[in-house]
Length: 348
Image (cartoon, rainbow, N blue to C red; front, side):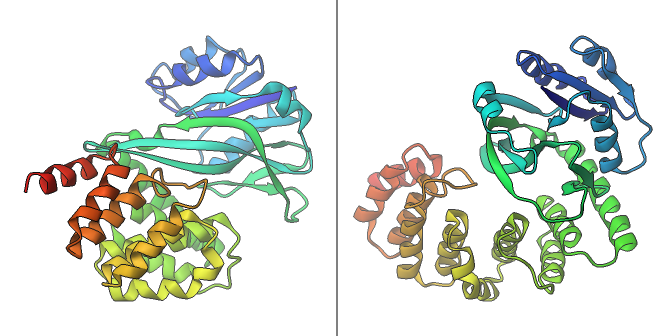
């Protein structure tokens, strides 16, 4: 059997939605509360009798590992209160369990900023045997092997929707400020660590502080990093967008030097298209946007579809080829910016 482990604090607004969904699978549910002042625990008690208190020590791994220690099963699935399981194939999961590897769920991050809605897909390590794995890291905790060795991962038939980035502006800024403070403390205690530097950069990036994001990303990239690691791939892409947002277009061209190492990602190829476009290499930009459309999967929704078509349309329109531009805008007709361009061009 499997135990689902969750740590919570003041999650009464969203917890029931997550637990109501989880409870239908019949797995053991472990809830660890780190100091709620609302009725989070009362909600948790409706779905499980295994609700525990844990004194918060500014360390997410401590809380995670405590929750895991309370599980009566060896197999652990970690879920957060702001996540909802939308797909879980129990039979397929049971048939594919590997206790020596870490299972990766598909997480769909859904959020809006103003009137714009976004969707970002990622694979996250969440399923493992507690006898072989644990958490490390006070913030942005990671699953590590208890024997200290590297481990293999495999994709499992679980999809979750994540709404954690949907918080209002004030709550989001408070959360980011807390994360930055914890990361800086961890950086002092551990010394320069590329993953912590990346997370610092990412925290600033999420707050649109692109200058500080660039600073920490570059510090992390001073290390000899494994380009196959997902956080390294994300860091390269985030650095590219930070430079574009800072209007450091010429400097962003340096990322072309790692094209061969990251070209397996539709998101990176699309980014290269943006870099070329902002530097005036329009033919090369169109080529890369077309390349991005060849990939079956991407992280940012639309990268391999309507966003690529829209940007091709923008380039063609800038080059004065409005008739051809409209064709690509119509290929991305579901995108509101494409609709706006079609209406403007056809009104001429």
